[in-house]
Length: 345
Image (cartoon, rainbow, N blue to C red):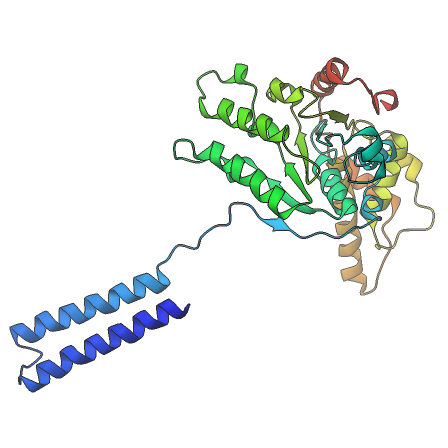
């Protein structure tokens, strides 16, 4: 309730008081026709006040800007993918204003992170933003598309205007293929191509204040016009974790939970070939639940055992198919000049 709502209540109360005073002076009973009309009018005023104050739909913020501060340990919370982490860190070297940009010229630092589902692309993008200390705006399709004609394109322009004004900023387009889809998959959609064009135009004007990071599970479904170097000038492929990465993911997912001293991580790694990071996280979750159930029965803290982990593995199937991997690798070989992580498959 703001000061205008309070003023409306006071003015309406005064108005109702005046009407009742007039009725009393004229000797009009509330049950008379004039009194009934006056009572109906008073109820209408009160109903209007109620709807005005409490019936207002809450205005949804279209873009939420999160404040940030530099965190050099942001990537340490993610298991594995050391080369990819370093690639993301190096991306900012010629994007930030410093002596190097004066000598070599500033480069756009717009990055597309793609790979199979569940490999932590969004987590890597968020960690990158935390590492740089920039403000963050995370965007999904629901933030962009509007039912009004031209509204979706205007939302894109507004997004980049806010990012530049409040910068330095990182814009994360999560599941970008749903925001800027390849037109060949839906030729009847007239809005998405306009949104893709608006994004392309704004990305070429980002300047040093804005870094754009896109994530997608289906890179072939993303509008190819965004692959121009002046837009996404770096593409990073996040494959399924290799043996070393899977062990680090297991350890990270366990966190502070007590483990048995002879936890057989090599066995867990060998039994999770083809698993994504999300699959492994689910395995560890099941193992923790099993240990928690034993702890409840025994009334004391018990460690998570290798058997708990194996039970989790037996309950969780790999979520990424061989066909999906082949599609990702095909896209990577077409577009990647720097084939980072391909040698680790």
